[in-house]
Image 1 (cartoon, rainbow, N blue to C red):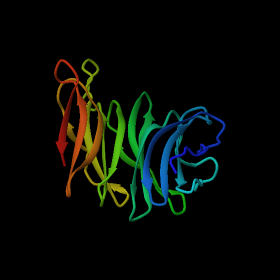
Image 2 (image 1 turned 45 degrees about the horizontal axis):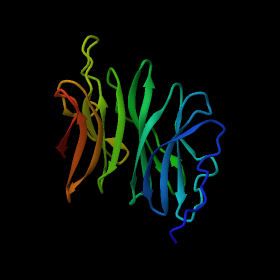
Image 3 (image 1 turned 60 degrees about the vertical axis):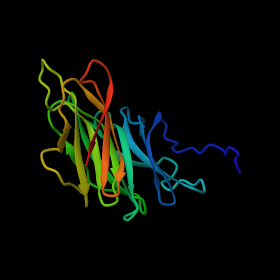
Image 4 (image 1 turned 135 degrees about the vertical axis):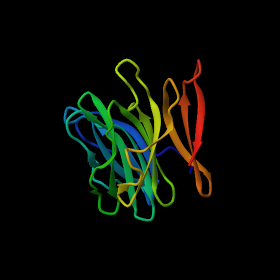
Length: 212
């Protein structure tokens, strides 16, 4: 009716919660957020039905936790399996890796952790997209860095049936000098997809893209 509705409390956990990502998911919207009730940030999820109800209780469902901060999550939804895939940064000592977990939205069951990249140096800022038959994931990756020459490149992985398809922690989309960051994925045509990122190979920021 064009009128604003009352706000919905997505999680009543005692710590701080911060929105990270969301996707249309069947009968509602699935939201991923980080929460620091444990003293460090963990990734949680919640589905809000179009009627305004919470599918996973008043606190949401825990997706990723442990020592250090799990954060920067991205989510996509598989309508065939009523399943969301949540990808996030996970600490590994002084560095960060990329992992994912699938969650069955019919019963809130969280699947085993899927390793996307655990290479040296940092992997950050994942973006996940449902292609219609698999999950496509892109992220910032520092594996080609040295102590004297830090690098930040764009890498890509595909996940299907609960596992990563491409070997060696994904494949590079851009290995240009300087940094590449903030990748996003979108449909390009019926059977191809475009990955776009910010690129600093020249003297200033520009945008580049790659087709898959």
